[in-house]
Length: 181
Image 1 (tube, rainbow, N blue to C red):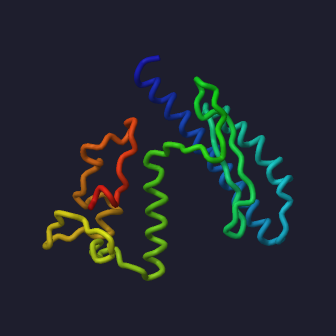
Image 2: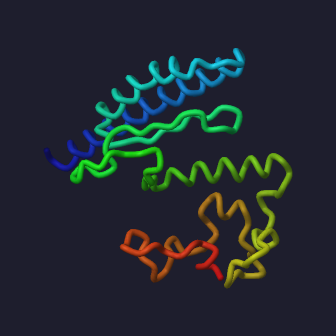
């Protein structure tokens, strides 16, 4: 396959994967909302309806594994994992398997931060250092302080990496708090 065809093939595969993940998510949300209105859930029925879709999505998206949790009223009511966390060693995935999710966390962090803003806990143009109690962002220009808006739009001027610490190395990089201290 030439480079462009390979790119298009991979992109199409990702599109199918995202569509499948959306279907699963919508199924979970609808199931949860139906359960909330009925106040009782037949968990076995929910799982039996969900599992074939999970298996189909794994196969269609060429996804090696997934770990899933169903939550009701802030309580985990069911967990399971499908596939292999290590294909070569044939190590089964578990509900505790740690996955590298890349930039997906940016969207989750943004949503969580904006929910806090909606509750009036800060404003987008507030100085971030005013909210940090245990440490401060070092090297901030007092004339141009780093704001929440800067963090959310990736315009803060903070470095994109953890300096000399390899993110994908054999050792665990320090926590953000330790690094900033």
